[in-house]
Amino acid sequence: MKLEIRGLTKRFGDFVANDHIDLTIEPGEIHCLLGENGAGKSTLMNMLYGLLDPSEGEVLIDEVPRSFATPGDAIAAGIGMVHQHFMLVPVFTVAENVMLGDESVRGGVFLNRGQATERVRALSQQYGLKVDPEALVEHLPVGVQQRVEIIKALSHNAKVLILDEPTAVLTPQEIEELMQIMRELRDQGTSIIFITHKLREVKAVGDRISVIRRGRVVGTADPSTSEAELAEMMVGRSVKLVVDKEPSTRRDTVLQVEHLTVTDPRGHQVVKDIGFEVRAGEVLGVAGVQGNGQTELVKALIGLIRPDTGVISLDGNDISGHGPRRSLEAGVGYIPEDRSHDGNVGSFSVRENLILDLYRDDRFARGMALRLDDIATNAQERIEEFDIRTESDQTPVSALSGGNQQKVVVAREFSRPLKLLVASQPTRGVDVGSIEFIHRRIIAERDRGTAVVIVSTELDEIYALSDRIAVMYDGRIVGTVTPDIPREQIGLLMAGATDTGEERV
Ligand SMILES: Nc1ncnc2c1ncn2[C@@H]1O[C@H](COP(=O)(O)OP(=O)(O)OP(=O)(O)O)[C@@H](O)[C@H]1O
Ligand SMILES: [Mg+2]
Image 1 (spheres, helix red, strand yellow):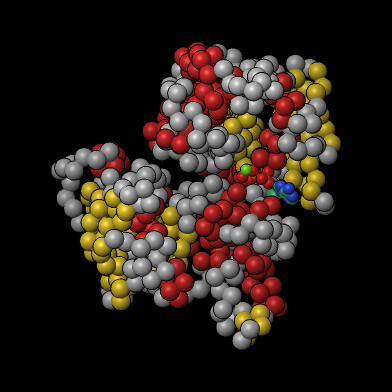
Image 2: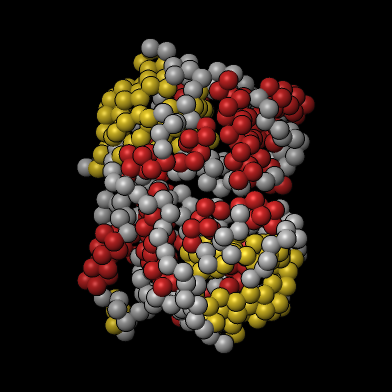
């Protein structure tokens, strides 16, 4: 199936999110879309999938103009989409989820389980998408849940499959598997529109690459184009893909963690007797495959959960279990891994979110009264400094593109003096230009004498920022190493190997 986009335009009020976009998706190609945060990629996809009404322009399928008022229309025309936030029902099985919303059974009171299971099995075999049709979705790792979404789209005979940032939440292993699935689908004639911020992935799997900047297509490239060139096409200037930094000058110990143990709500011990220290002026990177206790470690560090045992001392004072407000007042900055849950209040404006945890600060409040002018000035400065793309500082944060929401969190946390910065996946979903900027800010914070803990599943990010790297596996720190260690060694530690012959630091 050939998909042509002609002059497709989307306006939100005066703002033009897509400006006369022309693109052709050939049958059986992996077409990558690259672009800065807020460039208009998701908006374009939402129009193709019947979620947004185009202001102008048309979509042709095999030369015939088509319009989609609802996702149902798009699905009927052979377009499938996997959203970044999955829409599966956790307590249903894989097969039940795939059958849900299926036109052929809608209206029927019972799902035909046996038939559904067989159908999923057949699809899973045909496309090499390994999954157990009878497994409960809530028990599956994220990468497998995503496979279920793909099977669901294919079960409606999708000929064009849209994947909007599918790799942001996957482990390196799951990303490899997804890319293999994409190649398989392509070879069987499915076209794929693949959105990602990771240039390495684009080069590994793409057949063609289109770049969108500020709502316009600025060019199409082939995958042999270098990462530096692609970055420049996206951002419109040259980008340093790895931040320059001097060796750290370690000073006094700021954070000291001893014998920390945390149990999750289901009663599993997820952090097991951890100890480490971080000094002023250094970055400790915590590497590891998602789900090895990093999330709980971070929550304990900033007081969101109370550890079972152990000491977390900041400048010599135990702050474990004191709650987030006290940690904040003690000078702990926090960039959470899930910005929509823990980072921002979506219905509040950009301006309000930028002072969310500072509203008691003297700068913004005098007694009970908020200093509205200062709050507005602060917003303007932060928006400019962090290049937050928003119509105005009064826009609700939920209307911003994913990466720009992340920039709001980062901008706020860098707005006050910190002793300790705890950043979890600080650049998830953020474009290369903004990664460069955020990385520079983190290093500047280090150089100012802040102790920094970075938790990331991206090894590139761990290497770019860390002075020392602690690797977590199964709730424990299985090794602490310096960043001159080869990637394979870290990979071994991440997989649970305890003796890699490397010297510990
Ligand atoms: N419903 C809406 N109302 C107002 N503005 C919107 C709406 N949806 C999107 N926008 C704006 O349109 C622009 C494009 O957003 P879009 O989500 O398409 O970006 P994107 O390229 O997908 O970015 P990211 O890489 O961060 O996901 C953004 O500036 C966003 O704020
Ligand atoms: Mg998007």
